[in-house]
Length: 345
Image 1 (cartoon, rainbow, N blue to C red):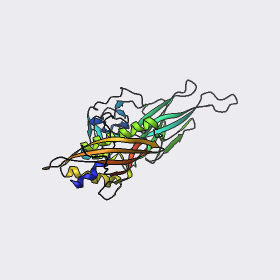
Image 2 (spheres, one colour):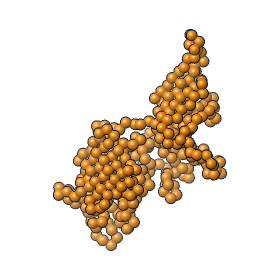
Image 3 (tube, one colour):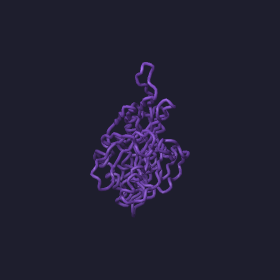
């Protein structure tokens, strides 16, 4: 049994946190099938219906349109048709691939039809425009004084067989919602992309959502731990990997330090590989945030069942440090120990 003890301390969860539906395993954020739809015909496939989901930190979800407008209310129920792609490489609706979008904040300035009294060009200006890079759109109304303009973003991965490299693309539309007036592009991991067509100009930069504080921080840290528990117990390793910072470190009692998310996942899979099962429960004692880090101390218990052996249980105390990255808490450091005041039930 001792070789499984080290598995026990890698999750913060609480009975007070709402349970997540299995389909809630989509990471929080916006997901669309934009690229799958765009290249379907080019790849000889029938295009699926364009669809987008917004997933909250607690796993609830709703459908939205390309402008981010809600089409349904948030729900905790299953997402119909959601399955993992072959080989566990991501998610799909039916056979249409879903990709997670990144959030951007944009500004747009459009030249007005009438100049200023001195004859110089007059410009409208709109800023703090929320955008996402998987087919997201923003409409900038000219209010009769300038043309209405729509900007659109894609993080393009080209059709199979193309020699083009993936690109972050910013489009400008005026009269045609499908065919752009013009566009510009940058590296897919760029934090900023802009365009200037003389009569319209604009720029979009990565939206770095500030970390929550106070009660909101406590709730979001609890939700992050509950999500870990659900995914670990389900053996959903691809989704679990998304909850770790790349440079995460696990320091569990009785085992060597595991450095990096991939090493940690390899360690966690040992129980499943041996045919075992585990149920985990936690009782948080502290859950607070300071700047871009969240700190959690919790009592834990892991109930382990191995083939041909009676059930066993281990318990102790863990300290977890989360790092706020692109609008989500990622597990960064994890340490556990046995404690005389935390005994198995």
